[in-house]
Image (cartoon, rainbow, N blue to C red; front, side, top):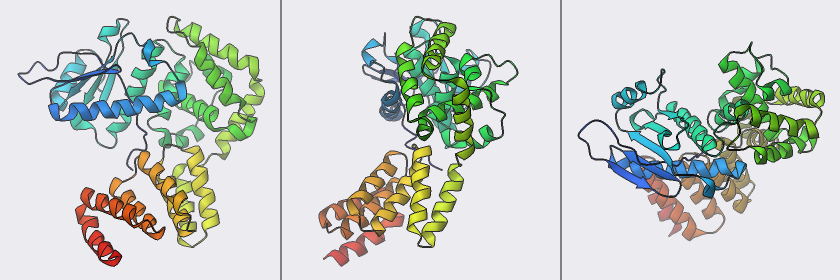
Length: 375
């Protein structure tokens, strides 16, 4: 499935030399990023993608970009061999698609991107590593559960629920304390993601207090503090406003009641195909709440709103699906049909022309037929 609105994340970069080959180096720089690459065609695209991601990250954290000591460094490779060769010189493991290298010296920190390997699976690694660079640019030593949990939340958020349900999750206090020696690194990642998901979306269990405490805790993170100091500061904030035993009970209830995106979409589409728009809406709206970066629930709510002749609402849902990664041609076609049904012929034509331009094989003939009908 195409990465959601994925979920758009961004990182800033500072100028670096590229490959040890005789290749032309293309550069793109602004206040947030300085990007170096051995292929000019991708530089501006990468910059826009990273800036979009940065914006999504910072909608939650609200860090002040003016506090950055320097633009974030990004280095783009056009060939996997060159990427892996460079990475082998700095890291013991190879990470497909992207890797972030963190050092005490700001000028040495860099996000490495293998543009040739960014298939659907490796894009998750880019999202993950881009978030790590973003977070550690403002807080070099964050609480481990925040770093791990939010990196997953902004990348592979939709894929971890099954693993979390299969794990005997530690208490919320222990996850926040980062004192779980019996857990493997991956199990700690799972537990951290589960806690982040709960704090972000478990509103009905505590009236939003956990989310508010989470937001308060961001303000306590210090760029000059150690990992232990930032961890303790956040833990004290949660202890001040919450009872951990009650929080554990709510955490368990949230995990037990949360369904996978696959199950919600399967049930919703079944109800939709049977004309049961009420139950279809319940499943899609639940999916939107639990998986806000997934495009499919927005798209299907657009279809339902269109069927109910709520054309303005349908358009908002379709646009939301587009913003979170839905097929651009498909959504523009849906926007065109919806605008036409709402009597907006000019807008309908623009959307349909856009769909046909993006994917002529699927939509060119349909566009011509629609234009003929509109005459």
